[in-house]
Image (tube, rainbow, N blue to C red; front, side, top):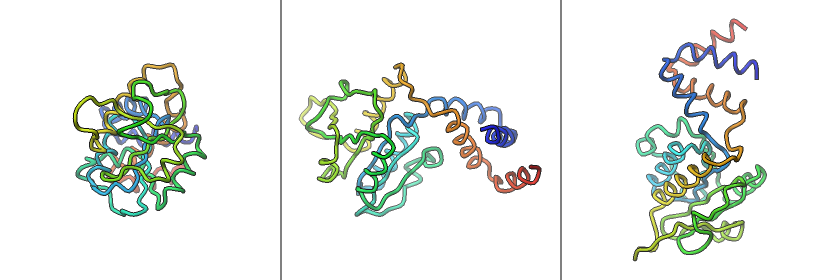
Length: 218
């Protein structure tokens, strides 16, 4: 931890005061209590928009299953969010679910027709929120693995929302409730420091040279 703090201090000396303060403000609101997983989303801009929403609402990790549809993240749609959010990619749903369960997450399947209403969802336990394809939704595999189903209450004629809109609504609601709770939802101190180091490296165009100079003095 001490060595990481030392490195962070060195890197921050190359950042503007405004950028340094912004990193501090953002990292304090980051969480791994909730995470998001997308499964074979066909339209690329939807996955990218979900990643952007995760950044906006403070979710640090996104899990992208590309078992059928293998595509690159659309940088323009994500608007740089992929620099600040950690994207974990999988070639099978099984490996994604196993990884999340191993890390203590409940598997939550979002659904337009059934499940716990958003306002009634229990936020006390870590949860991985799964979003499926635009046409067929989540696979049977995820539905069978799900510990719980979650739905957004709707009162109109339309029975579903675009995946990126659904993700934004759910993340805004749950993250707001989380920050106003007494749950220990923030990243651990060491996790915060490591992530700030990562952000500083990505923010500095000549980070490789700066790191080389730092290592030469150690």
